[in-house]
Image 1 (cartoon, rainbow, N blue to C red):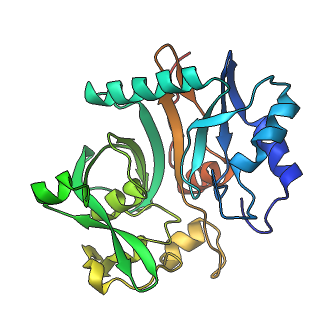
Image 2 (cartoon, one colour):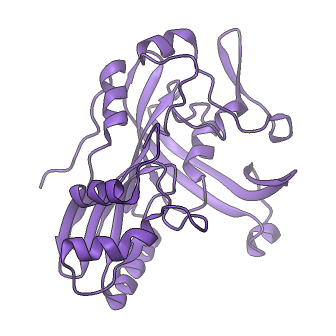
Amino acid sequence: MKGRPLGPEAVLELLEASVVHREGALLALSKPTDLPVLGHPGELSLTALLPALRRRLGLPAELHVVKAPARECSGLVLLSACHRVTEQLQRSFTAARRRGQFPVTYSAVTVRVPAEAEGEIRVGLCWQQKGDTAVVVAVPSPGHRSVSRREVKSTLTRYRLLGAAGGCALLQLQPRTAFPQQLQVHLTLLMCPALGDHKHASRVGTVLGEPFLLPPQETTTPRTQVLDAELMSRLQLSPHHRLPLHLHLQQLMLPHTVLCAPPPPHFLRTLRLLGLPSPPLPPH
């Protein structure tokens, strides 16, 4: 969602057209970027639109959110009209992670290409107050006490390179854990920030063309991501254009099926302009 914000009716039409799965009490759709699940008072949000969406789709029972990406991300939203089904699904996601599986898969376009084609990012994450705002920061070696007190959460993301072109990459990301902004911080630690990440990308600096990581205390206030002139040209961007985040919840593994949602138009346009492949979809 770029430019002038869409009104409730336009967003409802968008959500109705983006339904990818409907079976029994379950409904899955693909949300656009910048649509929050809850939102602030008076703000347009997915939760506020659910009663109207239910009526438009002719569903008999109220819908509630089982799983959804963060405001700034696009991708799959899993909705349920039955609390028992919701609880079963939540248990299945937890059990899958305990078995070492990765039931959630994201696609991301990154600035720079990882040194290794695949790997895992393991780090502690915590909230830290900086002035009037709270930011998520990495804790490389969290102590057992801070983890047990839940002051720090141990996090893990598995990544795989799907394609590279023009100094950018298409990555598959599979988080084992869930923490706010986990994937953006993990990509920054990989020194390959997500395209359109205006919160964490400024932590990656460059000296003589080589990237390096700035310490959190030296990081400036979150600002519009700075891209080099060549990349701006390839993406056909004006100097003041602010890209949406290229981080898309593409796949959810449920007990008896796999749900998929193709990336949104801005994501596909970037892939085409950069010459990157489209993320693979599993066979039906």
